Image 1 (spheres, rainbow, N blue to C red):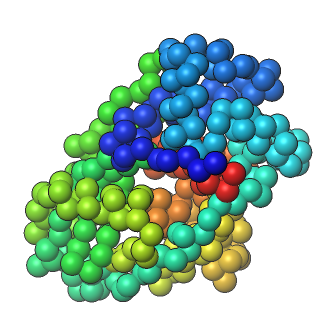
Image 2 (image 1 turned 135 degrees about the vertical axis):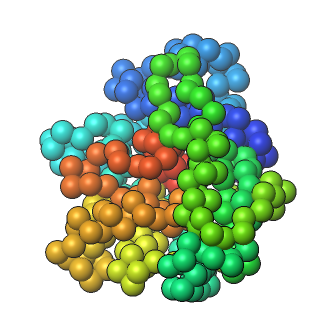
Length: 294
C-alpha cells in the first residue's frame, strides 16, 4: 500500500517531533516499546503518532523497529557504534533519483568567486522541507546553496536539535558571496523546494569549488541513498586514497545539503557526528532514504 505524503509545510512542521521519535526509537528499540508507549513519549495519541510517523517516514514505527532489529551491524556494534548508527550501515538502499542530479556547470567563474561574487545576481529565501525550514540560495545557473534552520528543540523527549536559527542560516549562505547582489524571494525558494522534494526532474546545481573538492562532491553522489561511507572511503573513490583528512574538509565545505549528500559521510569511527546541520537531521535524512526502500 502506497503512503500519500502530506504537503511540504505539514512535513516541515512535523520534522522536529519526528526527529525526536527517531532518536527515541533508536535508543529503546531493543525493549520493543509498543505503539502506546512510543506515542506517550511524543505526547501524542497512538493513532496520531502512527499516522504522523508513517506519513513522514514512509514506514510504520513497527516496521522501523524491525529494520533496526534485523540490521546486519555486528561489526559496528563491536566497534562501539550505537545501535542507531549501526543500523544505517546495514546496506538498505533507497531509490537513486539523487544520482540523476545534473551538475550543470560552476555557479561562479573563478574571477567572480575570488572577488566574493562581485556582480553576480543571486536570490535567497526560505521554504518548508521535510527536514524543517530550508534556506535556498539560487543563481541564474542553478541552486548554489541549501541549508537548514532550527526553530527550536523538540521539548517532549529532551533531545536537542543543534543547528542554526533561521537568520543565522540566511547570513551564512549569503556571506559566502559578500559582493554579490542578493535579493530575498521566498516564493522562488518555495518553487525550488517543490522541485527538490516533490518533483521528479533532475535538479540543476550550480557549484564553485577547487578541482579536488568537486571530485569529492561527485564521489558523495555515488554513495547509494541511505548508505554511508567514511571520509577515507570517499577519498579513495575520488582517486585520492591518502587524502581522508582533506576529504573531510571538502565535505564540510559543501554548500548544498541533501542534494550533494554530505549526510552520508562518516568519520573513521563511523558514528553520526560532525554534521553541519545537526546529528538529529542527519539521522532523519538517512532514515528517510531507507524508508523509501521499505
